[in-house]
Image (cartoon, rainbow, N blue to C red; front, side, top):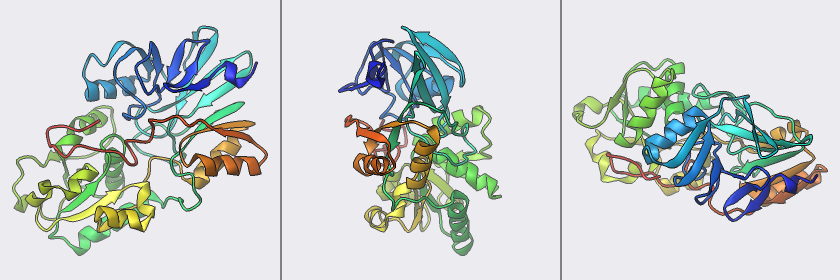
Length: 347
């Protein structure tokens, strides 16, 4: 049996014909297995969805109760049989509920990583290394220039700015699912105990995280707060809000942006960010290459990102590799749109 007999790339995403399912399909399908709830991987309209409970809950928050015909929750480490395939979900370390999906048939195992990172994150289960024959990896930051900073050190920069400018409101742009909650948790870990304010687009997901036992401390909505009350505070908001008239409600706002893209100074200048924070929920170059090597896979499929660079690295290390060239990923959590409207968000 060949890996292509188990999974094959199609315009709708990676498909398993044996099991009659797609993984993170880019268009509505009969049965979708979803790695995580970011909108470039989790779309509404599928007839049936299999995912972790957290991913299903987050999809429901984003798309409404009728986002799929039927849903089924699966736990980490749990296996189910689908049409002669053995499917198991493993933690991906990306955001709450994120999973790698292992598909095994007759002793051959293919792992679809979805998005992942191999550094600790207080808001989600840590990445679990899964030995496999074929590893399907993301490539969002698959260039040697992308070596992410220590997240605690980046938070220390934010706290130093707060101490230096105690009269200024600090606005931290962060994507609404995963990054925002991680920034808040890292601030709490660093000892910051003051209330943290939330843009309206952040409220429902952040309170869901808190409801799942993630320690986020006191959270307050920006909506209704007096301008003077916001002096010297931290507010977490969608990145797009940093350049919106919404910021006028804050006293002398200082803008920060938490993203792996902040490693590139031109990106920070493009967004007009005063305080770039290199905090990413994706593996960097070293994380990607170390993970690929550790899986023991002899064949690597690369998707959504800097595919060519990672394929070249694999070839120089004796691994068969190919880009999947599937269009439709990478549009949200490290480079996509978030709504400015305080009433909700664009997904």
